[in-house]
Length: 139
Image 1: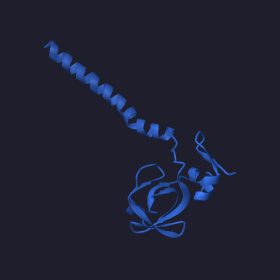
Image 2 (image 1 turned 45 degrees about the vertical axis):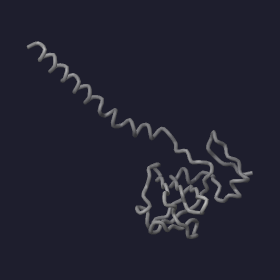
Image 3 (image 1 turned 30 degrees about the vertical axis):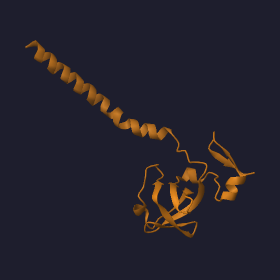
């Protein structure tokens, strides 16, 4: 019958088109993520965090606790569970909540770690932040 032949032909054409487009669809998220640099908030400070058994950690050698809803972003900007980082030390940008607990942590790539960033609140108050280049300059 002619209509069965049309249905089979259309199905075959659709499956061929889908198979040809599949690699593009699978590679699109990787290409998109490779194009954009991560934006680190200017209200963060630079430091070194050593992760212990959650919620324990050490920030620049001083004991600190992780906030209950802490967000830790890995070098690939994906969320990382604190229990997966036990016993490891990273150079990070971080933000504290008003009670002094770590609420946000960004584990830095080597390129990000090489940039100039304030390590204390006093430095952040006296340095100048350029939002276009996302960089800090010392006075």
